[in-house]
Image (cartoon, rainbow, N blue to C red; front, side):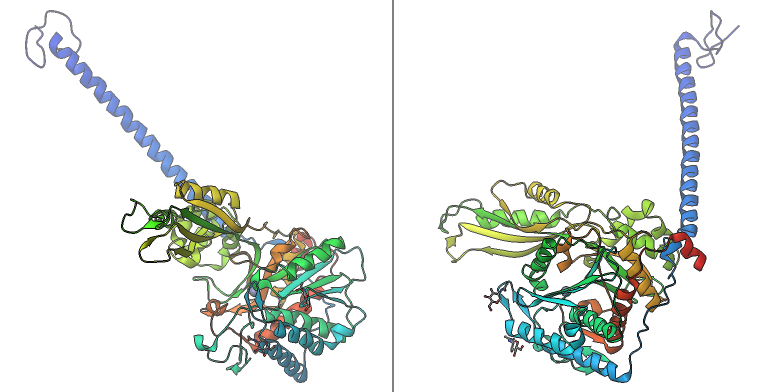
Length: 552
Ligand SMILES: *[C@@H]1O[C@H](CO)[C@@H](O)[C@H](O)[C@H]1NC(C)=O
Ligand SMILES: *[C@@H]1O[C@H](CO)[C@@H](O)[C@H](O)[C@H]1NC(C)=O
Ligand SMILES: [Zn+2]
């Protein structure tokens, strides 16, 4: 006799599981449930194995990349041979003369206060100084010189080999205002020496290059040098107020002559020593692009009225809401999508673990790194288009409802965004038709110049830096400010922004700030840099990466 296993009733039919009809269903469900659970368990197991496997593969790949990743391989590492340069040795007398010229330049207050306010007396004095300081440059039959827009200068030094495409060096004469009362240790136009440093407005922005380039040319000419590759020198007098007269007219002249340039080297980035946390040794960052720019005016107009019968919302309230939404909703995080990725990859091998691991694998870690970097304003600038509300104007009287409220927003556009994309985003973030938006001034991020092993300008600059400072790591970088060189995009595809000015911790604040200064040694090095750069440019073609490796 068979009994149901659950209720022990007698079974009148054959049942494999020994359950009565009532309980058979139940147990079958349980059975399928159990096997279902089994399947899920199996699936989870397989999934976690697969997951661990994938993680393992990623980890191995990342490790292999960390160990083998060397963007400095080949030509980029090799300071190739070029032994016929005239050596840059200056005697004691020349050293005194070079510093005296530089100090004279600092003492002339070539201040650009606003678009309509420049010290033209100082600019005229500066014209005279250049002629006095560099007599050979101005008298040599090798050099053609032209004054542009009264105070800017264009020099042309033709090369003996007409087949070589010329290049161009840029710098600017004007400076931003400076007041001793802001806390300077020396008057800002005194060029006073303190502990081996020359203090003054313009010492690192950008008279070190104005004077450095011409001083180098002066010494080269005195020693009988004549170039194979021709080059231009452009010195603007209004860079700090956008170069609308200087740089723009120089470019116009060059365009009229049909000039195309192999590359342009302007001010911008520098040698950073101890500035990047975790990096072993100094880094020379060569600017390969600049962020774009947009100044946007937001305004709200309403009927004016008496404050005793106010409407529910005022123009001020509406505009304040719009501005607050812009601050609360930063532009998207784009870290790793622009050339900042190249900076980290080039520097990776100079970091210790675990940073080396992270930076060698930007394909994996850039979202994470972006999240870390956005926490401080200095590094956030590399992560996204930044939004800064800079002006807010409304109201004229305490008891009158203002008809008009306006705010200005200043945005610096990340390399992988366009001006139009940014404007569209602002419109959608503001999301209020009563707020009118007007673009006052703006341009897209600058194109990205080449920096691979076939890039003539980048490699020449890199070689010159490494010959002079072998301890330095050279990497491409991004300028978050703008320079005169942005007017040159029709003349060349390769614009670089760099001078071997050494920045140590705290020095970046001197830029447009107080106590701007340069060491005497560093200024001499700058002259030496341009002295060798000009000669290095005489090479017809870059050596092939392969042959450069063999030379090692
Ligand atoms: C303009 O520059 C000249 C010297 O070149 C100087 O004497 C004068 O004080 C400067 N003007 C102002 C307003 O700073
Ligand atoms: C150059 O100077 C002259 C006279 O001083 C002036 O009329 C002219 O507008 C100036 N040109 C530029 C481009 O500043
Ligand atoms: Zn500058």
